[in-house]
Length: 331
Ligand code: PMV
Image (spheres, rainbow, N blue to C red):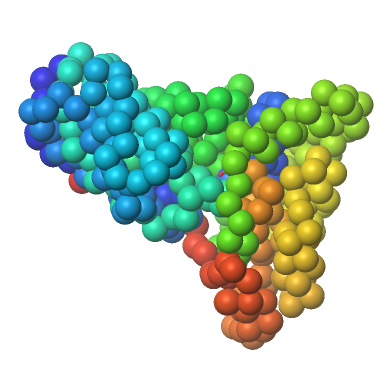
């Protein structure tokens, strides 16, 4: 395919998992929301035949002839940037091109805390590189980005790339795809970053180990998770926030059972509920990461909540968060 321009920009949002993380890998439903925090990517064609990524994390790496080299940063640069360079290379190869690219990555999503930053990077890079050739198709972007995200964590359900591409709120099943959820009321959500980074791949393996060692219990927990997601789908559509909060709390118990919560998360969840939240749970892989909270949407409750839970009481932050309805954007 012929190039139609020599540079492009794209951005993609992060996400929260409202219901069904981990169980979604085993084909149970999950509910996700895109959030108004984005990864921004700009791509320029160069004549070096290498793909170089410069990230605002202070890391630079380059891929040439299947070899990745760290140009700035420690081994962390390889872990983060090598799959992203490969993501860009795969798009070029799909379009029958062997170009060099300079890619700038600027993110306002903290990484490794359950907010889908790797998926958002894969989606934004896939979209930006593909838009050098034509107007990219969203279904193609999401599928291609999910393939690349599996270089980062091989058992990914693909949910993160779908929500980052399409935005909004969605009910997702791995084998069936997604349906958008039209929420009757705007969700009043807060997000707490525990400040403790996790490895999604390690947590997904630990849940697999739990499943293999506790087959019957896992089956029961998966059925409960499925029921919770189904009820939550109805509660979002009908604007029943109290029910939604209650379901979040039930979901958190299941996540504790499969061993992905920890003392810090449990303590924060209790603190949120004590300060008036309707529901609170970890979001994403767990083991640290972030907590999503549903707060009564009146000014008084919000003030009490953010005052009570505090902004800097822990290494992380507690902030209000809004649903992003745009998904991936190409410029
Ligand atoms: O923590 P994150 O953003 O990587 O979210 C992972 C969500 C899981 O359900 C644990 C994994 C997946 O692929 O769906």
